[in-house]
Image (cartoon, rainbow, N blue to C red):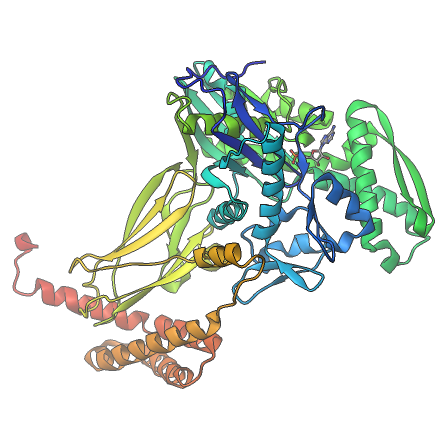
Length: 623
Ligand code: AMP
């Protein structure tokens, strides 16, 4: 098995930082030791992995890991799993997941999700921080009690900016100093040390418990580069379990009512039975799917052959191959141009998956390392590099989705293209569209679709303080900067006067820095801010400016506007004035958007006039 030869500069034996794989199903830590990465296991334990499950008892401390998982059947309502799916997300993003959760999840006024238990509320960041604390604590104890607080943490390649930020916040809450957030497939490529092969392309196929990622990497002279990433954040071993759950529940269809079938304890027990059967089918040609719930008098046994299971999950396997096709197409490659294939994630133990990947790429995939450990091992390699262990290896990642701004009319101006190597930056120019406009609204979006409404809004901000200038004269440069962790910062600057304005981009479903601070100080509660009121106040101000600018400019070009456009502006103005009297953020927003839309032809005419004035008296050669 080939661990990486890394030209170790610093062979310090006591590790300075750890790598942590914060997984949907399991989490674990690894460190660099005696010239290679090793997973940290308690003495005598077969694995160092901690189930990413939290039990929240009515009184006393939260329980994390194996003990918490045991509570899943007894107390499903307070046993939290797959919390990674909620990280940095809003209610609308996770509707599909919620039906599978026996615990209640709600969204607060700030768009942050809250898991409810015993009248208390927990954010996904808080719950993930409990998992990180447990992993960190176990690791430190297994290593003899030395405290390592610096860590590299991995996330799926598909995590967007807000989800990465939520992960970072969770680590902070756990008392960790995050050196870097890296993509799981990138970590895996590091663990395999494939930089030893001089030049080539690698496909990292990662099928875990809840997510699927495919990454296409290139290696040139020891330098990894991510060419493309693709995947499905809602495809993993859990779905394979669900296929078997259906089989066992069919047996109970006749005997139980719909309510009884939906019972969380029954569902959870069926899932555990399905997972056990699935694991056995990876080693044997047939296995029993055995569901026992003594309290309900349920004892069902169903024999499943590997053949039957493989037919059942074929659509799931095909979905992973579809993503592989998309990733290859983004990288401009054919399957046969890939020289190495790496399997990551517990679900790649299934023979049906291995065979499908081998057939697709036409080569035997790497399976030498434990697929559950490979990501943590790679994170430990990265941690080692970052603490000065080796400077030879340069790691580059890519932005998983395009980043851009909503433009007038709701279209998207892409500023940073998908799969751009990070860190990266790009600047886009904007201008005002009415005379003396002193503010500009920006909506930062992430996604590949043409319309902003079809993309994910990462945050909105307003640049105010633009000097009053004729329409089209102000020059605002908006700079996008994605740092090495894949985190996005956006800044705007008015260029014609050199005036700058500082802008805070608030992730829609993330926690603010202040919120994290308060949480740290004040245990598990933090104050709510009245965002709606603030938003309404801002909109009233903005509408006032827009109304004044429109009324002032309209007479100058009224004759050139067609009657329909004039009527639209009149109607939008009337509604804007009425809305400005209210504190109804929704109505204000609609009125603002309507006025903006209606004044588009007006803005176009004004810009024409400005251009004509600027050109007046000049010969063509001056222009
Ligand atoms: P991970 O998120 O990488 O920890 O992967 C966990 C997933 O791998 C879970 O869905 C497990 O059921 C699955 N898994 C682990 N071992 C096996 C196995 N022997 N056969 C099939 N699936 C497995």
